[in-house]
Length: 210
Image (tube, helix red, strand yellow):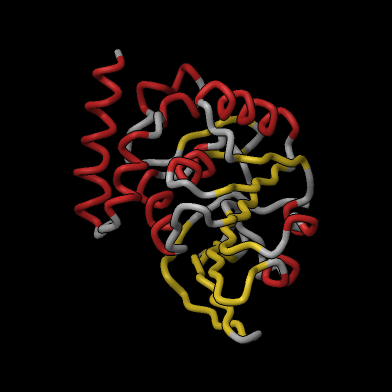
């Protein structure tokens, strides 16, 4: 079974990521090595490496592999970076960032999801992930500022408090828009106190709740 998952993750990288323009060798290595199947419900593990999002309970999803890789690549992670993640969900995005050597501070609104993700982190030895139960719109003020912020659910507008917690020179990536309309993945860059916003892709995420 282990060999099968290794084969599937390799195929995922080759067919879903490289062909769509993911070029960071570090990100590709993380996507190849973080065991995605351990972050989805058991009955869906055979689909873990498919080119689609999957439900993880409580109306939440684990994002399509390409979207995880794309969002990760765009914030330009490097070892030692301090990253705020809003929406722990399954924990997979946080695990990818942790594999890359980042210190990840991840906030989840649903206790059962946060607890399950923490158990997975512990089982896999990701000691560089800190979890917190709370409202993602508030971020994690006591640990700010962050080198990057990654938001894995869609607010209707960019949360100002998250921009405030972003370090000068940092990057924030967030899907923005109403659930029943077109959402746009945006990257926000902060430099000398000025923020700039760039539209990247049309996407579909679950709504960011308070």
